[in-house]
Image 1 (spheres, helix red, strand yellow):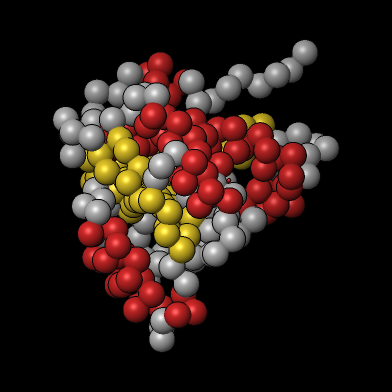
Image 2: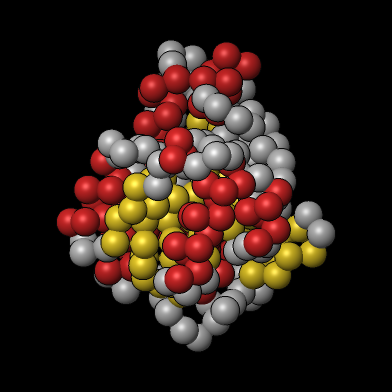
Length: 221
Ligand code: GRF
């Protein structure tokens, strides 16, 4: 996939702050990619407005308009293919994709999750981390497979969890990192620097400094 402008399709269900970060990085030419379509499964999703503001095609595809999950996903897949999307980025898309869709776009779907996988998959990753009492959490960009947040891990960032954190304060700290590592993962893929070997994602020519950036030092007086 290296050497050209990667065509992205972003799937959302809500506010779309990760989408915004991806759009900004593309527009500022920080990553060799372009968002060509945004698809939401919710009619009211602020992410759709964000897309329109940037002149990006924004589609609402209503799952209720289809007899089943697969036909809904087929419609989504057809729209993505029509626009020659190279990479599908899930950014707060609140549905589990079926094996049909994963197979159709195998190796070309990525997701961001607000926890350090394999800990705390599924909903409320940040709340699960607070309730479990972990001292460090973070976020993960990974390839999508048939499981829930279970595919090979591309990049992660860590943040501290403080005693007085609740789900919201931790979520806000993690979100800042999400906005950095999601574009970073897309850049690595666009540059053709990603190789998947079983569960492991190998990043070619990785310089150590590239990773330090995403683990901000703990602020301890
Ligand atoms: C993020 O926390 C992401 O990790 C999770 O859903 C949330 C989406 O937020 N998958 P936004 O719509 O990108 O603001």
